[in-house]
Image (cartoon, rainbow, N blue to C red; front, side, top):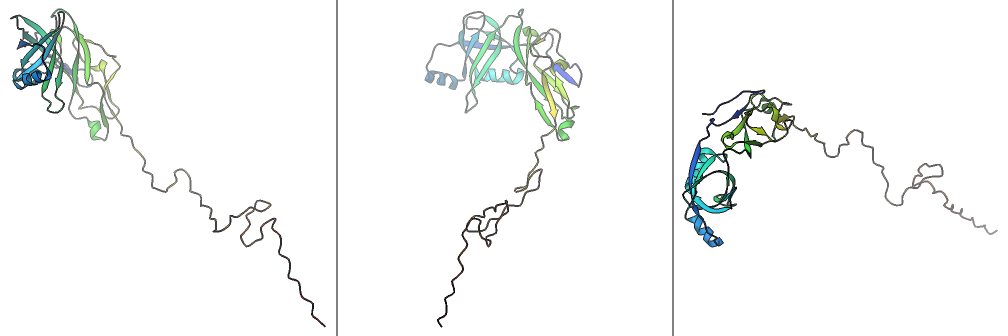
Length: 260
């Protein structure tokens, strides 16, 4: 069973029993192989793996079905007693898992050998539970910290940290310092780091096409067809019917003299 410790805004941390359960997994030695041989190896139900740690790296394979079952049962943050090809066993953690980008099937695993007496750094998933009233009121939920980096002994590794958001309103925030973690687990990120918050939605004003914001649109100047209107001597517009400044006046017609 897991224990829940209330703190602050109903923030909980779920942790394993004081004595962490180990899962057993068998491994086989893997020799260098080509891409085609690796493909056949996966098709036969074996997953290529590498073991890192205090000794030289070792190339191994594990049974695909058994490892997939282990993942579904215990998750990634689990201690595994890995039976080695030389009949010994090592306590390991899952460091990395690779999948085929198309089929999403497991393609490679990295194991990391650990000492039960030495603290290690590991990232713990942060899970949200409940429905926030602030979201129902139109707020936007922002889950910022999805993994919490901690340092502890392998036996003290929490499976996950759960944050209850069922009382969060718009403007509420949960920080790292508000999480309840065991005393023997050291958090490696800033206590003021925001884990989750609910913010007001951003409202964008819809502007009507052609409308002028903040001022009345000025009436456009109408210019008649033909020549441009020029300004008069005192800055007044001269109508097209008026004579243009500087233009020569037409001479009056000369009357012919009548013959007597």
